[in-house]
Image 1 (cartoon, rainbow, N blue to C red):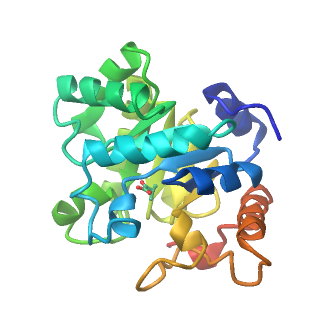
Image 2 (image 1 turned 90 degrees about the vertical axis):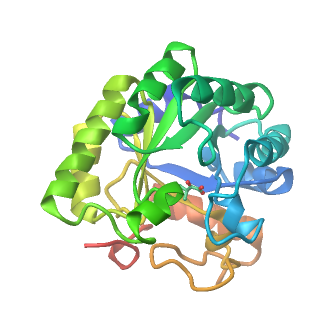
Image 3 (image 1 turned 180 degrees about the vertical axis):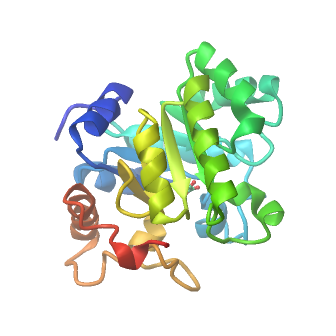
Length: 266
Ligand code: KIV
């Protein structure tokens, strides 16, 4: 088992070109397995609203839900960096963001929090970082804005939207963000953003050029109800058991075999 992963490790990985392997986790048992498989980051995602709670969107997820699942994950975690999502409307003002991020760090055992959006969250990002709370930003398809976006669809295809996303990424980094999730954006745009910022980018449906990749655990194991997202892959198919599937995911990310064009958008 390697040494515990920190922000310094992630920066070094980006500089050295080592890919970052990230998976969502919501409980202690899977966190143990993910760490044994060598995952660098466990993300306690608000996707738990979909895969655990059975909602259509992440909007119903509450702070109490996030604290509960983050604490379950933290009880088992010893190696991977733990990022915890701030749920919908828990960071609508700077003071709310500070108070709620503090709860995720103190009671949920978060090492870093993640919030969605660009311009509207810049002041909160600055305030969080000023108070010692590392921030992972999230651009592209931001599921908490699904109704505003008109559905779950690829973002940044039009040149103006792509330029806006690139500018948002730069400004989030200036505000102090230490990592950036890029969800469902064209391969070329993810590549431009990754080259333009020094923080690591972690893609999901964003092609092979990001500094790291994240998958929702249930997609990775092929147990998500309904249609499999185009960008995901069932690593359990062909694997002997769940630990073998998780190890194969980490190897595939580290070797640059996943994602390939089949799991990306033009
Ligand atoms: O909630 C989540 O699982 C996420 C990932 C899809 C990046 O935000």
